[in-house]
Length: 108
Image 1 (cartoon, rainbow, N blue to C red):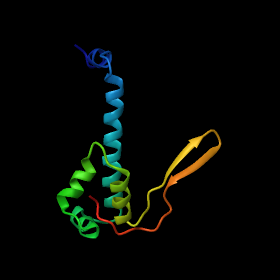
Image 2: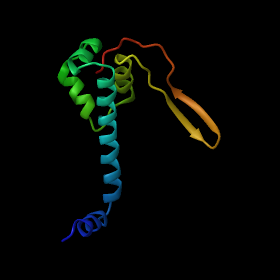
Image 3: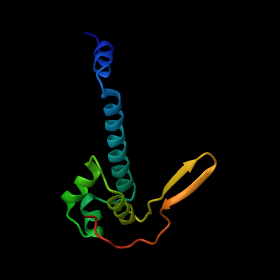
Image 4: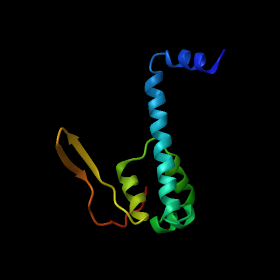
């Protein structure tokens, strides 16, 4: 069976396209968090020290399937940034979270 035939067969199963989208989102988040940390010049251990958590906790955050907004916010603050979450509808933008001072909380 050729690869494209196999792909069509797999994606024809109920729920498969949504699961593929979910996996792509998970990989995108993991890749982005790792890239941001590396661009900041920090190792996992250094970021862990900034956040007051263990290095394995940073690994878990970077590979988590479901990161809470609170943990994501703390992680990004540890890199010196902030998290902004907004709702868009038409031309309207409503900021839901962000533009706050870093809190110094631990990434739980």
